[in-house]
Amino acid sequence: MSSKGVNTAQELAKLNANKESARHCLLAADRFLKDGEFQNARTELDKALKLDPSNGHIYAFQDRINYFEELKKKEPPAKP
Image (cartoon, rainbow, N blue to C red; front, side, top):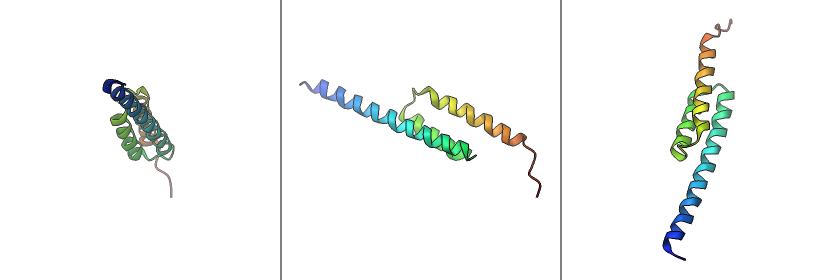
């Protein structure tokens, strides 16, 4: 087997591992988003973006976070 084939297989394995890690970051971001922890969700998205910049779901999550942040700003303050 040529070294080029080995490198390609190793690179493919690393790419797949990065995509899987990015998926886990998105799952964590979703949990933070549901809990209203927007900054933590953004941190997870930043990690996912570094791991898999081609993942379109990252940009959709950014839009979701922005949407929910705007909703929260529009909510009237809770009465004591």
